[in-house]
Image (cartoon, rainbow, N blue to C red; front, side, top):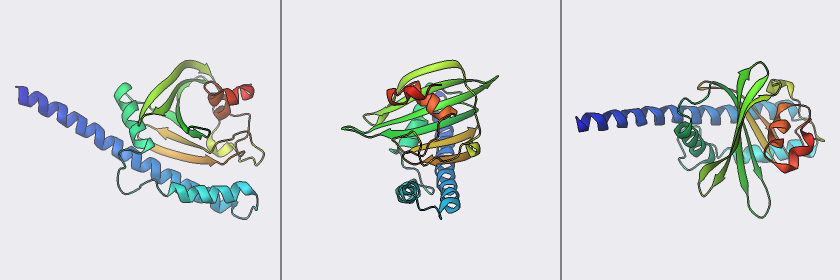
Length: 205
């Protein structure tokens, strides 16, 4: 009986890992393809933001679409979330950013859609190769506009590069990149960030 129990555990963990692999690859592919389309539509604009975006997209080529990098931010994040929230999420967004300073601080925020204009927000930051919670806020009144409706603003409010991705179950629907000073106000992204990062508190309105 003991070996049957061990086999069941091994099979469950393998199935979960296989699913995470698929989500990770889909996420990387969607980010790169959507950024390429975003840059193509903005290529003729001479502003610094677009040149910065092109340089950053070159960096993002490090996101593997053929194999799993088990120490990457995204894969370790997916493993952490699936461990502590085994039911995972159905309809949600992930906001990613890295704050620059004496120490790099990488954050990811899950915005889970409840309906009735309410969301649950889960904040995480990367510590010593793993992830720790920076707080959960549930039942927050927040209107969510589609990412395609949030237009890049070259006089935006963010000092960090930000990537926002929309998920539905295991499917990755859309990914959008905002270079430095490219994120406009008046949408859910700065409002979520203001819940956790003091530099965004003035945009909570």
